[in-house]
Image (cartoon, rainbow, N blue to C red; front, side):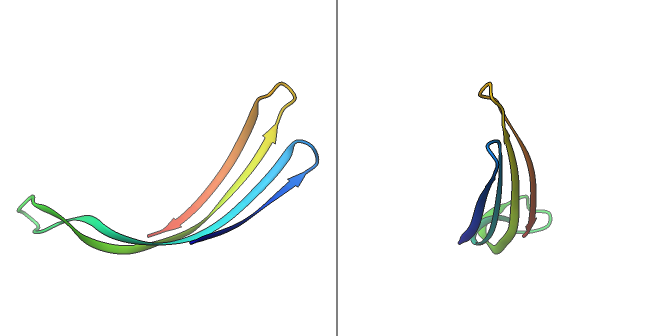
Length: 72
């Protein structure tokens, strides 16, 4: 799941904050240390937060500054 908020500041600035949590299944894991064989039997979770600051320019261009934190 994810939840976020977006806020405009003036005519040209926008801030987006989003937090997320995800269950992960069928991850590729090595079956043995020396066998070189792999299987899709791994699982885990991932969670984090994304921050995006956007600046729009009058000529149609825009720029983003992004910070992402993720823990797997």
